[in-house]
Length: 185
Image 1: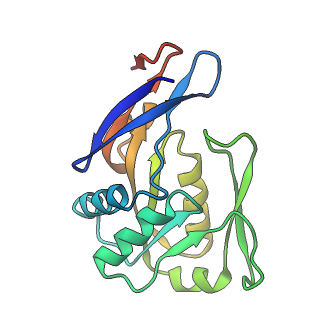
Image 2: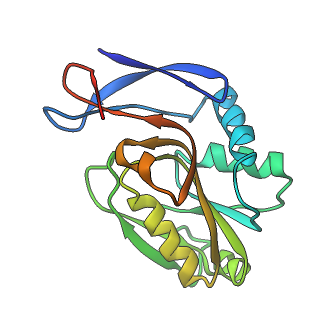
């Protein structure tokens, strides 16, 4: 297996390269179960993000980052767009998404009680990696349906062309790779 050495927010990790196709590979960046990485990135991102009232992330890999950012920032609440409807959710908002790391389309759900809290508030969208931007677009749709205002988009890594986007704040670029493990620019 080939790896990509990454240094972000003062933390170093070797990311295994995983195939998306015969000729295109991505570096697998996983913050689940890595509190040192998540907290360090949360602190670094908070230094760069615009003012916000609440933040939202998608289930599941963005949760540790969103949680750490909210805790460090002193937020009393943050939101998670769920991948499935839970029994406690009522008046659900939904939006379909196709992520680069997911084989099939998924639907993200937001509870109406959370949506009510978002109305008229500045909402920061948080994700671990932005690649195609599909997950962020789904979150933007949910926030707008709820009547919230987009404060900005924050991510640890901007993968591939996402690094050229002017509407996101990120800590480091993550290239795409060819089958031999060489970065594609």
